Length: 512
Image 1 (cartoon, rainbow, N blue to C red):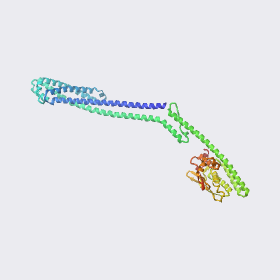
Image 2: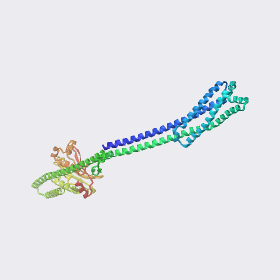
Image 3: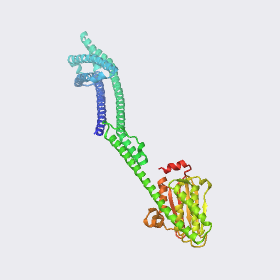
Image 4: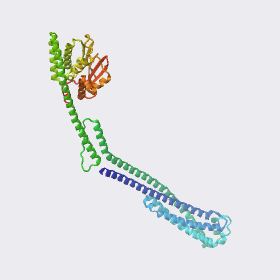
């Protein structure tokens, strides 16, 4: 369950980071919405001020034709003043102002003090306007499409008392001060409206940077966690591949396992142990198979040698009985040498030159038996003679060629039976060829030789199968025997073995 806990822990960490990113995003987004709302509040203040300014200008400079219009404007004037005060109070009480730079807070405070001063002038002017309206109702009733400002100047000219003129002039002075203060107030509000969007852009940039960094951290943590979780799988896949690719996986590293390891590492360790055990059993089986093949080869030698010895001795005996000549001495000498080489050098490696000598002794005996009716051609390059090959691999091939390939031609005139023995060097391989012009074989007969069917063994071809298996056992693919034949024309046996140019190498190969 440790692997499951790792996966759950990684998933939980990634989920917590995503939740954190989501929370931070919501927090910053909420803050930006608050800034947007704060910006809307400043816009509302600016809009209310503009509306109030328009009403003030309408009262002073709009051409009016009735007292009712002045009454309506006065009511809107008072209502808009109260609404602007409320809007500004809402803006000033916004808590986000404390989080913004000091410049914006200072601008808001400056605008606030300007508004308090302007509000004082507005309320004083409105009070005076109301008094003027009540005290001068009869004079105002005669308005004939002129502005209140122009009418007020007329009233001031017509007024005889100093106190009444002072009241009218006080109204005009309040409106003048309001007009001057309004310009500063408007600039302050506009400055706030310019600074807050800049702050919103700053926080948007901060949000993008924060989210980008957090996403990078999530990806980094996810990649590292995934790599940590995938590492045991990669190691196990590598172990499986090595088991399939390597012939000797004992070089595979066996990782130590303790109680803190997860299930995959335990499986990997168990798999490597199993692979090493399988290959140990494979090596043991291979060793036993080699010993079995060696025993079969030795048994075959013991089988071939007596048979060959009996046939040869019978031939010599019959020859001696019919005629006594010196040729017999040479045959006996060749037989003695052949038997000595067979016994002393069987199972090991000898040079191609020594193998040719053994083949020559055998052919000498066969020539005596068949009265020199065999035409023998031997061609080997001199550079090939010092290479090493397994001993006694040519003599069984020659025996099969004479006894099974040329037997129908040996009773005819001399020269009709031809036997060619040659060797060539092909890149890193030695190719030995035994060719006869005998009766040949079809493909099915050749296949039965390599399958080792009992019917073919009785015909004497067991030697070819045994030599082929011996070469394969020593050198592996693609080495061994290849047979090319055409019924009634020829049979060519090709023996392919790798180049072995030093005796020590030959001995090393033989001990495999």
